[in-house]
Length: 152
Image (cartoon, rainbow, N blue to C red; front, side, top):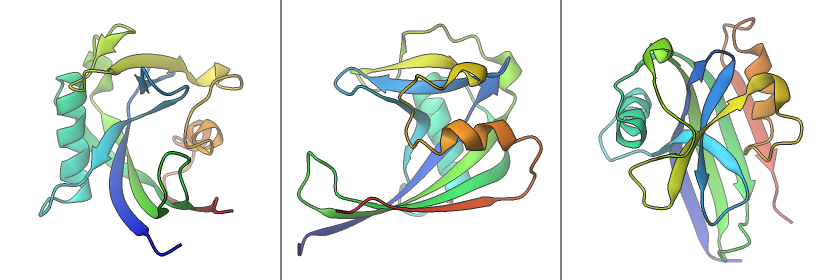
C-alpha cells in the first residue's frame, strides 16, 4: 500500500461525577472523547482547549497531559495506511459543566453523552485502552505512552 496518512490529534478527558463526557456520531456505533485535529501553529494544549469550546461551548483549562497514544491502522472506510498520534489531556473545571445527554456538538451529526466510568465494560469506547487507563488517571500523575499497531 503506497497511500499513507499521518494524523496529529488531541483528546479531552472531561470527567464529572465519575462520568466521562464523550461524543457519538450518528453514523458510527462507538463513543470517543471530545477532541480533534490540530490547526497549524497551535500547541496540543491549545488545540484541546479549542476543541472543548467548539464541541461543548465551555471554556475549560488543561490540568495535565495524561496519555500519548500512537496508533497504526488501516480504517475500513479508507484505503490508506494511517499513523495517528493523540495527546489526551485531563481537563479541569469540569464541575461547572451542565451538559445533557444528546446535546449536539458543532458537528451536525454528533451528540455528547456522559459515560459512567464504573460501567464501561459493555460500551464501545474508542480507543479501547481508555477503559482501563481512565481508572488510573488520579492515582498515576505521570504521562502514559501507549503504542498500538492494528495493521493487518
